[in-house]
Image (tube, rainbow, N blue to C red; front, side, top):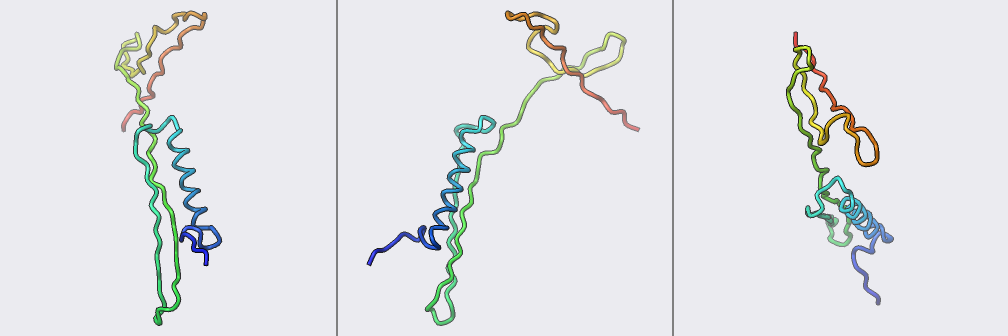
Length: 119
């Protein structure tokens, strides 16, 4: 009599669920927006529910991946004047706006934060 792993029960559906979660983990690992060294985890839950005569067992199986969250996106801003005496908040840029790079492309102007006045 051949014996099988419990993961192969339910016509292979349990194993399929685990494989699906492994694929999600691998996708998360190669996602450049996540921490590359963060631990990922797959939790497999097998719930056994016997009947009152202890002859039949219902099995519920689930697999759940715990993935690394996307890393935060960071920028820096500075409070400055717009030249007309009005305060503005501008995103800091690494190069001088309007300066040409080695390929002849002009460096963009910094983004200016939209400030909403409170009533």
